[in-house]
Amino acid sequence: MKLKIFIFALFLWFFWIILTSSLSFSSLLTGLVCTFLTVAICWPFLSEHTERFKVSHWTIFRHFPYVLILLKEVIMANLDVAERVLDPQLPIEPAVVRLKSPVKGELAQTALANSITLTPGTLTIDIKGDEFYIHCLAEEYVEGIFEGPLQKWVMWLYREEIV
Image (cartoon, rainbow, N blue to C red; front, side, top):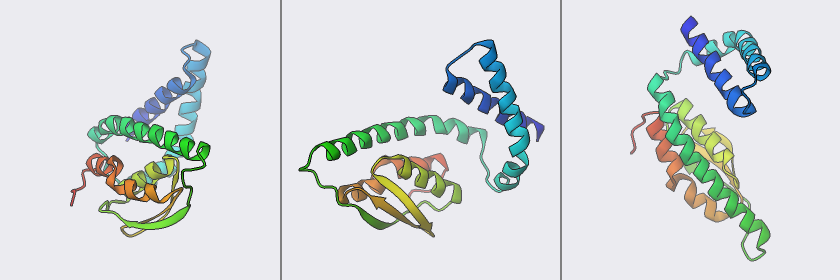
């Protein structure tokens, strides 16, 4: 248990270093203090809710390619939204759609919903069972949501069977 707390704190500290992009002594020390205070305050709440999720060390490493794919999708969606906003010929027809997904696990569904929400032009409103309720900026976005790579990568990430 103590090793998990230490690894979590170390991970947050590295995240701090990446976000601040500073290796000065004062920045590193401030990050270290903030990280360990955050972990000390939040760990009791986090551990109680995360015990039911089985996440291995390999799952953490599997996030790296997923983050790259997500970043590519976010950039492509940003370009598309910018084009729609700047070109009056392209339609902006907001719609709420209901789509079924083969993603079953709670953690995997949450990751997919957050990935959809992070992608400009789409917003996950709700998940009920295997149905996602998604607000889209245009009808074309609906077709690409589950046919694109995000759903497949989330299933690979959380080792769910592709049906």
